[in-house]
Image (tube, rainbow, N blue to C red):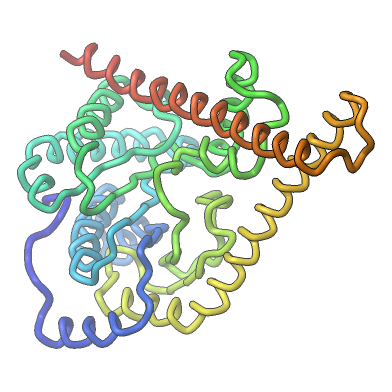
Length: 333
């Protein structure tokens, strides 16, 4: 099965899709694709068949998202916690990953046609080396496509991602790229695996479970969360439409909360900068209020220097991540 199933919507699906698109649409949708094992049990087939059916449903869902104009999709494919499952099941999932990433490399023309950029997010060194190599080839082969984006969270948990982001900032301070005062929520955002993506507008979990299971905990603080009872392999276009309608019903409140949060974050950064300037003025022998022109000059200089340090750090971090993939491709060659 292809990563993106060809085919258009039916007449009734297209008609309903056009009605839905008249309202605010999510630009980024995340899926917790839950229920593959229960589906296999329900259908009296092997667990591996349930996982395979789940991948087929992902391909179909990506097609629906493209038809609806949703340009970015993030999926929870394999949690670090899944390594605790039986060896038979884990080995089966790794075999499925080998098969699907190999297939992805065979259909680059289709990905190029749709402009699909594939990103794989997680602690990839936890995976077998041959799967790491396949992932690296897929990521590098599609990194310049920008019509739509598929983020596959593999060997991932959100707490692990946040811990890694903190380690990256600590590395930046150790390397002299950052000052300790540069560390902030905003910088942590940029150190996450998802740093190239906007936060999800809508997160959907199937199978009736009402929890996030350590998925995108940082990124979904202002997302619309929709929990649906349908098992993932049985997911339909109409289930997706229902989730989007719930997003539209809550859009104004979500947007207001997100704008308020961003404004508060900007205010806190300004307060930190002003505190730094006040301390600097006192060191220079000025009164705490200082000369207004001198205060403004220092504030501008403080902001510019911080942004320069952060940009240099982020470029070094991006280079480090790209180097990881390029080394893997060199090994596989």
